[in-house]
Length: 302
Image 1 (cartoon, rainbow, N blue to C red):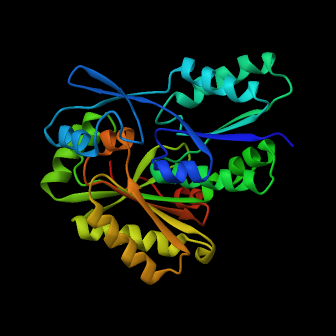
Image 2: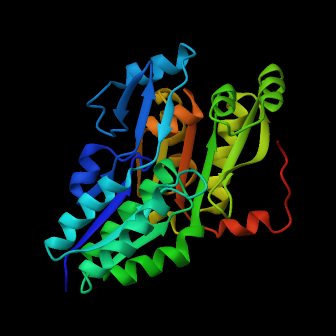
């Protein structure tokens, strides 16, 4: 059986150690601010966490960019030339065109490497939701599953990723074009916090609103508690945008309520951090099919 390289991208928010432990590579998106351009590095080697979040808090807009096709071609070609198959668990098309760029590269490379497999999976999830799926893909590879089996599994089961987030200040989503200015203004005046999930297209969807930060955090915990399946066999993932104490609170609360095997906490990286803003939080696990949330529901917040 061929070796398989599992890829994700800068939206997966996995730290250096976990990527190394599971043999995961990632494709780097880009960010820019103050007329400077950087790779969206999850190793924080071109700028620090304090640099990024301090810049955001100062009011400077941080722009983001998709993975460039040349980088995808170079990285995929290196793996294919070594006789490997490739599986890329990608950020949603609804949030980044990187997945479409990768599909175009894959089609072009198939001619040159007809005996190798390249699979591109739109994860429909971001931050550590994407990270969780990527780690699970690596685990499947290590258990001997083929690239095709891995890709088919995630195409079928990606809706079972339980994906809940909240932001502390809607002004950052407004700057990123993710929410209307009027909604951001009135929400901040009224101290309303959106509680969001990833919809059927991978777009962050404001499912409910909470009065205040503590209530929003409680709602994240309630959703995870209600929707998780077989928690004893899995890790709950928690991402935070420079608010570690709040992430630690979520960990302590959820581990008391639900018998997860483990908990993994990490920063929201530069792409999600720039879009959602400081103070954002996310919780992720595998559980009930999230499409059921939308069967009889309409947006409660816009």
